[in-house]
Length: 277
Length: 157
Ligand SMILES: Cc1cc2nc3c(=O)[nH]c(=O)nc-3n(C[C@H](O)[C@H](O)[C@H](O)COP(=O)(O)OP(=O)(O)OC[C@H]3O[C@@H](n4cnc5c(N)ncnc54)[C@H](O)[C@@H]3O)c2cc1C
Ligand code: FES
Ligand code: FES
Image (tube, rainbow over all chains, first blue to last red; front, side):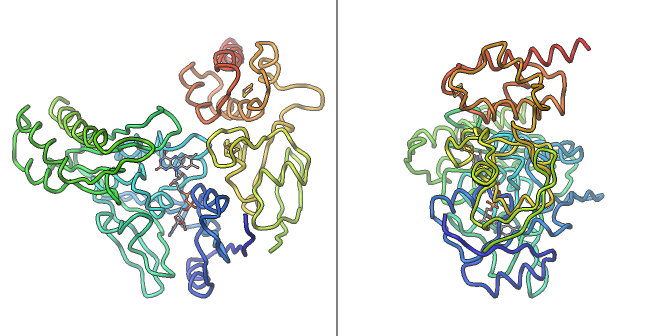
């Protein structure tokens, strides 16, 4: 591992200024992606900015209409939080099988989405919840809908000097749905395909990971399902439309065909779950 | 870039200088000679490097040592009190829950964290808690049993 400078600012302003001032400087949060990349020399920073000294980023804030999960809250802290468990079951399920217990004690959801791997496990629940990514920006804070956050493999909608401060999710009146992860092993494995299929206040929302350069919503399938009764025929047709909305590739984990089949299966099982529960 | 950090290591207050690019695992092994935690993969996959930070199991190969400032670290060396072994260590020996022993310190630290949080776990809880620890020798059954023996003892207390 090459050497680098390391800073631990305690305010967002300082952290942002360091990012703007120093060439090849990056944020380190839980470090579970960053340290692997450093080790494999896929990343050779001049400086790392640890944001974990910024106290406000460790909070989970519950309000009447929404819950905000701070950027430095670990996956395990989030998955054990009462209000999160109560309102965001699909997200908790997704996070529960991300990495191992040891990884989840370090890893954060903000790191997961900022790393922008196509298979990020927290992405599909956030997509079906229409979560908002909260951003500190030197030009004033802004919010980015999660549906506009992913721009490509490892590319996100942040400008230099911007920092994700948290993710805000609406408390919906009724959510019924499932997260599903297909992987070679049940524990400590990356998703071959992951999906969230949910009925959110009566509207069907569907999202997939690991079948395109970014985690994405299946808008055409959702549109087709609008105001339709979930009969076996409708479900079948929806699952065929979903296949056309993704563009998986062959890789070491699975073939393109297998992934397409799992997309179809996710839709069928997910919609059946919504209908039958 | 060197950093002076203060932390608690196996119940002892420590001030130490580290380079920014050193992992907690390498500092434990190389600077403190605590060689219980092992490097299996060095990338979070195997759990051989598991130690407790503020009571939670983490992979010490994935944490930069500079990040340990102000925290409490417990390694397998800090688990026994002098020559008195922890219940889990005794149970691993009595139940033959190790062969080469490479995974054992990490396995025991994951089990310790589970028992601290939940002294009477089910077998399923135990399996989930050690799912981030790979063992290439034992086939896991004796490991699960060794942990369950301690859990059952807690249950009867
Ligand atoms: C063994 C192992 C198993 C894993 N299994 C899974 C799995 O099953 N599913 C899964 O989805 N992932 C998995 N991962 C990947 C990783 O753990 C997750 O992506 C994790 O959520 C990353 O979070 P972090 O806090 O550790 O991020 P870091 O490594 O600290 O950061 C990741 C990236 O995000 C940027 N970043 C972090 N925080 C911010 C912020 N607040 N604002 C702007 N940019 C930021 C960093 O600069 C970096 O580019 C695994 C990793 C390992 C090592
Ligand atoms: S050496 Fe740390 S997880 Fe394998
Ligand atoms: S005893 Fe050899 S790896 Fe577990």
